[in-house]
Picture 1 (cartoon, rainbow, N blue to C red):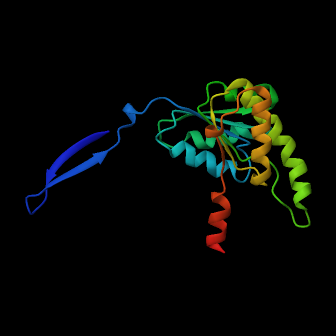
Picture 2: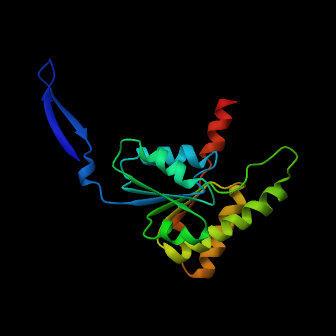
Picture 3: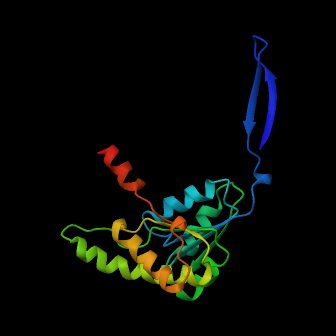
Amino acid sequence: MFRSVARSAAGKHLIRRGYATESVPARKFAVLVAAGGIGQPLALLMKLNPLVSQLALYDIANTPGVAADVSHVNSRAEVAGYVGEEQLEKALEGCDLVIIPAGVPREPGMSCDDLFNINAGIVKGLCAAIARYCPTALVNMISNPVNTTIPIAAEVSKKAGTYDEKKLFGVTTLDVVRAKTF
């Protein structure tokens, strides 16, 4: 952080604060399932975040295209795209924060049980990989239904011996934004 002092027209001291990206430590963030409807705009937002120095985008398909598009945004973050289960380790290695918007959206006529059954398996697999490859990372869960995917993430990390209640979060901001809009 830097400070500069200037005088106002009335002669009073004004302090301006700014943040220099050079003093921000290197941090690697990952978005798991980055080619989806939530993952793509989230990847863009993370690319714009000055705290991110490396951004790993992972999905089972289409990630190289998303990574190429996002990498064109002028910020300090270096972007890499990873595809398929065989590249998940490389995507997660050294991550400080992992954001999981993975899963299928709720379709008309789909019950909460149907949504849970599909997304629970996806979350379980991704959380097992997080426990294996970046066990100290913060984990932000967006996958619906959040109130049931968080306990799955917690149980997977407990089983792996990596659980930390201060590092697992359920992100419900999307629901709040939708509620305010409608």
